[in-house]
Image 1 (tube, one colour):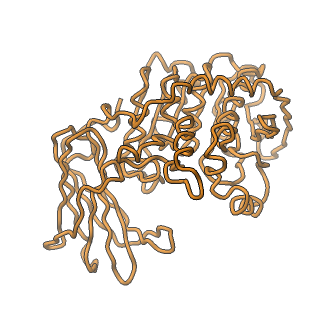
Image 2: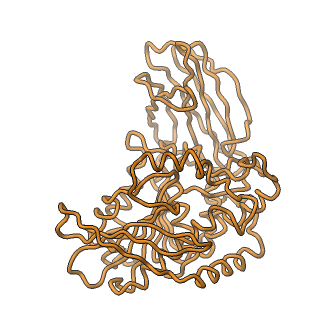
Image 3: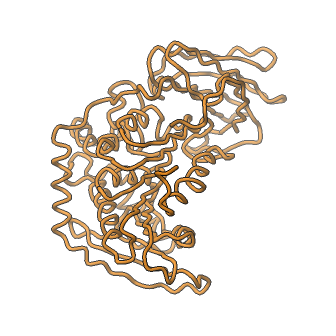
Length: 438
């Protein structure tokens, strides 16, 4: 299922212009308007996408350059836009299933600006860059057995929150492989014997966990566990996390990325499996509902968990990372953490081979539960083409919410359609066990 529904009408997308300054993006009040004939951005092979570009009155620019990038990577054409009365257009005809990114850049008042447009053709026909390794399932079965040989030994500490009278809140710590630990927070409503379980997994970065991330869901009737992707305390001061981020965890995706048995993501993926298993063994679990959700790196973990753990009953992933690790080999950009190019001072071939054991797409065929995925059509961090290639491996119930105005981060409501589906449909129905009746 794809949302929003395909509508043949015009729409104006107002995109705030961004300054490329000191490696970061800053948004201006000045605006650039992009008008397209298909607001949802979905086309068929053989059709032509037309972007109409209009400068805001009073915007002074030297020139506007454009690049068209198939798969967000391979440049098929580039040049200068020819404006007449502040208007110009760019066209592209699809010759195969896939995504196209329009990259616009210009200089104004000695500052560089950038914005992008996107479109995709026959997304349900996009194929994997490479097949999964023949020993993929054997490898992960072995790692789960290794994990099972390590006792969980959960340490659960009640934390009293004076302002929360109807919620129990805990810090939790469990053992993981290689003498590491899983650390997180758990919340549940008081005086309820059996509850549906919700595992929340986190986006990239190094930071503390916030109690409201579990308390809000517990107030809605969930047994909620939220885990840190790293083996770190969850409630230190910000300086602690900045020190870790700038020190031992700087570019953590590259840690041991030449070795599938030592990759940083091995511990992370197994943390998710163990967290899910822990929830199913609690006496206050209802024995039926186990949902896992996250965004970006959290979306990666949500789908991996569903692929590894058979008791997961639904998985929800917004702009999921980790797809299409070998995408650049076929001319399209891979998703964060960009294994393909994260090879400085490394053996590229070994990194590429290792990446295949952690590519989310290779876990997808083992998912047996319903899946909700939000995909940003303008996302350059986790590009849409690779995500579609992976999600197309799903044979069970799935809903794809294509977000035509969304880059990786939400801006101006660009990801509201996904959150509406999560908050008003998926979570309430899953909690009430009415989901499959809908």
